[in-house]
Amino acid sequence: MDALVNFDPLFLATLKSGDYVGFTFFIGSMAMLAATVFFFFQYSQVDAKWRDSMLVSGLITFIAAVHYYYMRDFWAETGTSPTEFRYIDWILTVPLMCVEFYLITKKAGASKGLLWRLIAFSTVMLVTGYLGEAVYTTGAGPAAWGAISGAAYFYILYIVMMGEVKTLAEKAGPTVAKAVNVLAWFVLVGWAIYPIGYMAGTAGWYGAEGQIFGMNVAMDIIYNIGDAINKIGFGLVVYALAVAPASE
Ligand SMILES: *C/C=C(C)/C=C/C=C(C)/C=C/C1=C(C)CCCC1(C)C
Image (tube, rainbow, N blue to C red; front, top):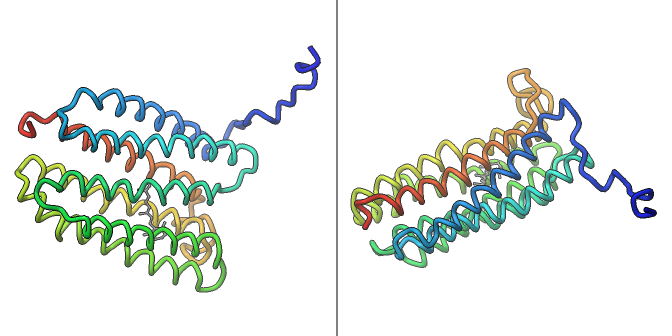
């Protein structure tokens, strides 16, 4: 009884009505969890040669599910952006997306060097993004660090859309080529959501902080939508490849 009397409701994350950013944190949290269950259950259903790819898809959403669990509470408690959890999640999951490109094109001859190059550039992209978003937040800081981050992003985009990854995927056959092409479009369109969130959250773009074209658009809503599209969508493309008849 005592425990009940002393129970502090503040230990529970509170979600206030009208907190749309908070809504997307809770939806994101559940969506990542559900996607993880799906990918892990499908693991044993697909052909053995695609199992590592399915596992990595599940790991990406699993890591995100755990971080979203923390992020939604952080948001509900403080009403501020959980920048550190966000970037820790990304520094783990984005390299795993690079691993996904590597695994799919490995049979066609993808080298470890290619994998490490993709991982190195995604690390540069995220570390410089963090510096602009959380450390050098005044003056030219966000723009300068954002520009370096953007350059690394464009290099990754080039490799997967026009460079070695594309060449290898075509060598692997039409089914793999098609899947890698869709994944490259995720990098082109889905990943481009993040710089928009970054600009909404750091001063100096679109007038006031947090505004895009005069509207108050929260950085975290944009990041949360980006994560759902990229992590779950990416995994579903890999799943579709794994169950495609021609991939047998
Ligand atoms: C699952 C998480 C993913 C796919 C995260 C991707 C993040 C990016 C592509 C972030 C890119 C950024 C820029 C290109 C410039 C501004 C700073 C960043 C880090 C937001």
